[in-house]
Length: 411
Ligand code: PLP
Image (spheres, helix red, strand yellow):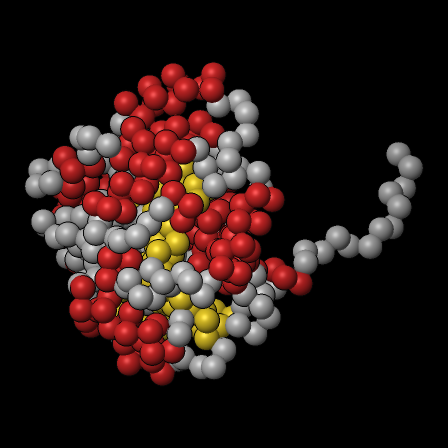
């Protein structure tokens, strides 16, 4: 073998210096390695519904299959007409006024649109208020776009609702926007209208844009209802995000949308930027777009899963009861989503590095969680638990977590 030439290291760009997405971080890599070695890992780490037998509605699959022959070409950059029309009707059902077809962008999941929305907006030094804890793509997208994420506190003592005083205190002349994730990943909180109104008042007072990630708006328990931010913020530029990944158990289809709502008269330049970025990626995955109209119309099978006796709700109740029965573990019971964000009492569990803690749990008990700091939570005293596995697996997994924590207490 000739000696390999000495080449300079290929390094990632400086743009990635502050970008972090720990949900698929090093602990997951280790879990995959362990699986390759033949170990069975119970995964409570990712909200991937189909992997746990929450099947996508059959009519969506059938529609995609039927439309596959029509899906080989590019579509309009903003998406096919039928999908955007269906989203327009959906905004009407959610009492959002004034949305036209032109305000709607279909994307490869909400993820692509989040990055697009931030890229179109931010200049170096611009600040965006993002919740702590957050779904970390938002923080990562702000950083990647050259902006500075500034975290506002969601208050565990108040059911994880955003702390409006903290939010106000973090607004500076550089602040451009507020991100709201409602229903919330990772806490499972659902925000009452008065909190949404408080956030809208701040946006109005300081001339900020609202970004509302509402991708779990049908995953609701105990009879609660969801209000879209845009239904209350008619006079404030508000961009809402939603899609098929969670409500319709089809994250692999990569079908999401973004709707520019509220007062957009002063935002034509930004909208031009969004249009340019949408055009540059040509269009979203077309078969996935064909699923949208069918999904949004008619019978909504998610309702049965979240109703009393439904599988998601039963698993939420079971996971909550089991996790809060462990000494030193407390948790706000989720009203929505697939997640809970329990707290470990630091007096009983003096954790210094929660990623190592989660890695140790994986090695010892073959259970995979994500550490709280992965959601930009500033203290190493939380973790996120996904309650998607079947009841037996949940019992098994939380039993193992309890055993691990018991051994931790005895150290
Ligand atoms: N927003 C939130 C709050 C999420 O939890 C997720 C995925 O877990 C996404 C966005 C990404 O969704 P999509 O599959 O549509 O890209």
